[in-house]
Image 1: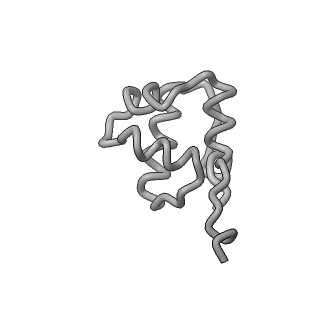
Image 2 (image 1 turned 45 degrees about the horizontal axis):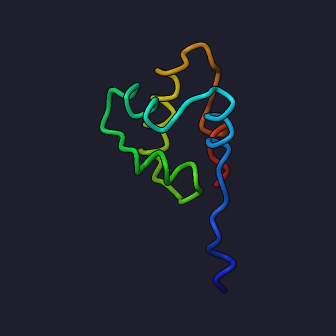
Length: 77
């Protein structure tokens, strides 16, 4: 049953690539406690709490305020 635990990249990964944003860009844009590890886990597909998902969303909006994004654009779990 290990195949059930295979993580797949989240839409966050593609959005960040399209916007040319690195994990560091989000961590530095965040006004909250957002770590590199949280962003990396989110990109790779490890389920994150709603609180951390929202921190990532707010950081992305701070880094690219002109970009209309929502949680549904970033995470599919």
